[in-house]
Length: 218
Image 1 (tube, rainbow, N blue to C red):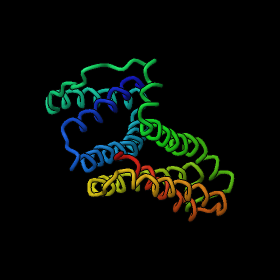
Image 2 (image 1 turned 90 degrees about the vertical axis):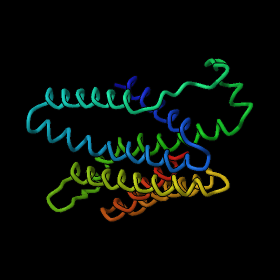
Image 3 (image 1 turned 120 degrees about the horizontal axis):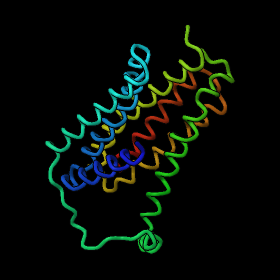
Image 4 (image 1 turned 180 degrees about the horizontal axis):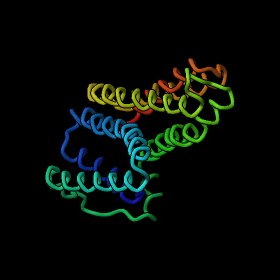
């Protein structure tokens, strides 16, 4: 699954980059990332329902069938994109590439930081955090509240990705949206550090999602 996901992500980004122009690339990357973001919670909900109704095997079989269907659609719909690079870069050549263009290191470091904070620290601590501070919402305990928090975060990410994608096409530099995105990410964690409450959790989740969405089209 990890290998398949890697192929999908790389293929999707390279295809969108190839078929778009500098004037509309941000918009279409935003559409693509927004769809990916919405697919995550939709899959969680559908997988949970199928598992409860039919079992694990049926849920995995449905996911496999959906993957095969997506492969057929991609084969029929996606354009035949051929690489235009005249030379390939080997792994041992990467340090030289980074030294030649500082932007490569900046882009890599920014994406590493966002994924480390959002997908790493947040996902691994969200349930523990709500349980530690006894945060509940009606009949929902820590696990249910964590699910709502993640849903809010992903929804904010999807909406922000669509908006920022279009906005980045109009700016002199697409990097102008990165600094506010990192600021929102920091604000979300700061809010949790000093205001451990359900309202703060909701606001923080929106900040995290907006930050990830603002960074996504780059």
